[in-house]
Picture 1 (cartoon, helix red, strand yellow):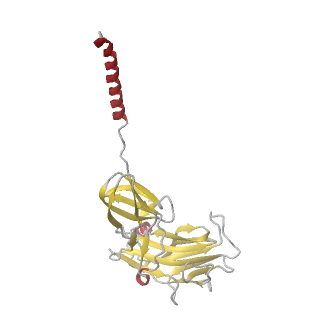
Picture 2 (tube, rainbow, N blue to C red):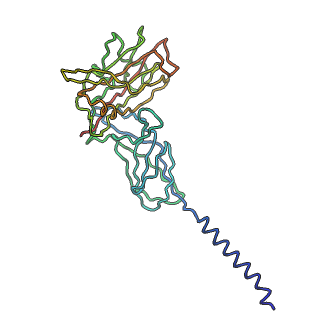
Length: 300
C-alpha cells in the first residue's frame, strides 16, 4: 500500500526533471564573452616623406584568429567569444568621401596585429599604433604650406596664400583661399599627374584637413593630350559644406579615374559663396583654410 502512495510522487518528480531538461535544451547556457577595448589609433609618419600624422580614423575593423568580428565606431568595446591565446588584427577605418554611409578600411595604413590571452568577462585594452604602408604607397603631393613654394595655384590674383594666425591654424601654417570681391575662386595643383592608375582597380586618395565658411568643391582636371581632340575639363566629386571647426576628409578618386581614362590629371578646388544646398555659407568674410594635402596612390 505504501508503494502505491509513493507512485504519484515519483511520477511528479520524473515529469519535473523532464521539464527542466527540456528548458535547458530550449535555452542552452550562453557563452560568456571576453572584451577588447580600443579607444583610438596612433598614427606615426615620416614628416618629410609622408607629411603630418593627423588623421580621422572613425572606426576599427576587428578580426580574431582571421575571423571577422565586425566594424565598430571608436571608442569601442568589442565582445569576443574566443578565449585563450588569440591573434587580434585591427584595421583603421575611415568614412570615404566624408560620408557615414561609406565606412572603409583605409588602404594606405598598415594593420595592427598582436597576440593576447582572452578570458571571459575580462577586458583587454589595446592601443594600436600604425603607420603608412611604405613599400607600396606613393605620395604624389604633400602640401603642408610650410615651405616657400606652393603646390597649388590660382588664376585669381591674391586669392591664394598662407596664414599663421593662431585662431585659424591647426599646426604650423595653413593655406588660405580668400574670395575678397569675387564670388568664386578656382585653384588647381601646379603638378600634372601622368601616373595615376586608371584601369587596375587601385585606389587613389586625397587626404586633406580643411575649415571653411563657404562651399568648397573638390575634384580633378582631366587632360587628354591627343592632338586631334585635346581635352582639359574639370569634374568636381565632393562639395564640402561650411564647418566652424577643422575636419579631415579622405576622397577616393579610383572610380573617376577608371571612368575618364584620360592621359593626365590635376587636383581642382572651387571656393564659392554660391549656395548649392548647404544653406549656411558666409558671404561677409568668405574664406577656406587648408592643410596637410596629400595625394596618395599604390605602386602598381
